[in-house]
Structures are given as structure tokens and as C-alpha cells.
Image (spheres, rainbow, N blue to C red):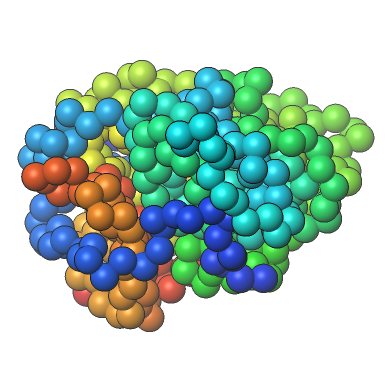
Amino acid sequence: MQWIPGAWMGTAGVAFLACLVVPVAMVPNLEVQAGQRPNEGEYRVLEPLQSGALSLFPVVRNDEPSAAKKWNYITLDEGLRSGEVEVTEAGRASGMVRPRHGQALPIRQSGDRVNTLALINNSDKPLVLLAGEIVSGGKQDRVIGKDRIVPARSDPIDLSVFCIEPGRWVGSSDKFGAVSENKNFSFMVQPSVRSKAMVQKDQQQVWNSVNQSVETAQVMAASPAVPLEGGAIGEALPSNSRGMNTTSYAKAMNDERIVRQVDSVAEPLVRSSHEVLQKLREQHAVGVVVAVHGEIIWADIFATPEMLAAYWTKLVRSYAAESFDNIRAGTVKASVVEAQKFVDRPSHGEETSEGETGLYNYSEVRGQTMSSFYLQVLLPGTKFYAHISRVAEEGTVGKLSPALIR
């Protein structure tokens, strides 16, 4: 990576809410009101980081919320790897219940469910969950359907999820873990899958998107060569690269051949992450606008540069996976002006809100050409947005033309 003043240059993508497992606070809450949305001009978009067909426009804000700087939280990956966060099938949740006054809490036993898992946060910090994060194991791999915050030392909660492994309903393990636990990275689903969970909230559409992504991965695995930095062609992939014999998104994207292909786009950004993130911190960057083949498809914006850094690797890998979708292949490049308009555009459309009083609010604004999602922290005496997602074209991740974002 080479740092050029004013720019980044480099060579480097069944129902939603099931029955509650235990009594929880994650229900629509009329007392929790969405806060004032970020104003136009609050964020500034910089020249993009380029890697193959992927463009990442850093998003900068000049004044970080003071409360956000002091906020201590734990990520899903950190919690799963340390054992402080446990996830299991709903029917096995009784073993997770924390006793009170010498008696276990009552728990509704209704068997394992496709769209429900049970989670407990045993850490001393609140747990941040982002839509698109994968938990692997149990009877099927799942993806988290929406952002939320789980309080420290929580009782078991119902975790609304979507299946991303339609070909299996046999337990591989009692508990779930992060994808690629034994490697230096973990995965989120790419935007085309993530949007089906967040916007459409439809299991069949998630499965359809997973099948399409696995098919694309099959083609990637059978590719004769790996593109390297500068457009060079690397060594040929193994001759036995045809077919991965899996319906699991996580397993397909964790296939060594796919990892090599994704790395060809993501690694220049991930390998130099210290340098990249240091520069982003100096610029007070808190997020990115994502463009693939010149189309603006997504934005992830956090409260602080440190939060962006915590999710950097897994986000970049998800964006890189999306960049292999040749349906969008073209020569047009997205501009800083278009990316800025995508960030500044007011949210309009149907709005829903839920959360937990004194902890967080999660609101969704679903429009015809763009949907926005806000995770707001409601700490005593203060409010700030921990994470904002913007999804182009009502979550279909299609082309958001300049005419639509003006």
C-alpha cells in the first residue's frame, strides 16, 4: 500500500422472529425512541482504497461522541473464542440458564428451531452483535439477522437468525463458534446475503442468495489462476478444484481455494491493516462506503475509529467476496461525489424500532432505493450510534444510479 496525500491508493462483498426461548427484553418497545439521525455534512467521504473490482471509500467524522470513546464492549468473535459468549440450539438452552436464589429460571422447551438460537453473555462487558456475523456449528450454520446489544452477565436470550446451510439438520456440535477460529480471520456473509436477512427478512431469499454465492464460489474454485497485485497471474489452482460438495456458505467461503481468491482482493488491505488503520485513525475515519464494479452497494459506519478497526478484517473479506460477482461487471467507477451523496441522503420510508430501555435502540428505515439501519447505545445520560448500515436498492444490492441519490 502506498499513502498519497488526499487519497488512498492500492491494488487490492421460515420467519425472522421465532418463539422466544426465555423471557427477554428484545421486543418492540414503545418507550425506546429513535434518536435524531446524523445530519448532512456530519460525515465526509475520502478518495477510495482500490483493490480489484472493490472500492472502499473511507468515511470521516470530525467529532467523535465522547461517551463512545469510553465505552467498553466485547465483539462476538472475542466472546466465542474466549468462551465468555455461548451460543447453542434453542432446545438445549436450559443448560445455559443462570440460577437465581438457588432456583433455575423457568425456560420454555420447544425443540431446536431453524431461525432461533440461544445466546448468553457471561462477560463483564456488553456484547455487540452485527447483522451478517456467522455462527458455525449446531444443526446448521446461521447468520445473525440484525444488530443488537446484549447486556453484560445476561440471562439467555433469543437470538433471531437465518440458516445459511440449507442442506443439513444434523448436529455437528452442541455449541457454536466463530468461522475460521483456527485462522487469523473470521467471516461475515457478503452484502448480497446480508441484505436478504436485514431488509427482506425472508429465509427462502437468504437460501436463494446463499445458493447463488456458493455457485459463484464453485466457479472461483475452478478458476485456472489467482490474480495477484498489479494484475499479475499467480500459480494455477489444484486440478481437483472442481466441486466443494457442500451447501454451507461458511464452509464454501472457508475452502482453501476460495480463501486464496478472496485474499487476492482482501489481503492487500488486511496484510497492511496496521498501516491502513493507522492512517484511517489519523483521518478520524469511522466507516466505509462500498462499491463493487463501480456500483455503490453498501455503507458501514461506526461510532469510533477503534470500532471500525475491530471489524475491519471480517468486513473487508465480506466485501471482497462480493466483488467476485460478475453480474455487475463493468468499467464505470464510483466517484467520491456519489459516495458522499449516499452517506448524506436522508432516510425515508417505513420505520420500525425496538430495543431495551437504558441499553440500546435498533431502528430500520426501509425505502424504495435505500434502506438504513441504526444501532443506538442508550447509556445513562447519553446517546450515540454504535453502528449504521446503509443498503442500496432496498437490499437487493443493485445499482444505485446518480439520478436516485441526488
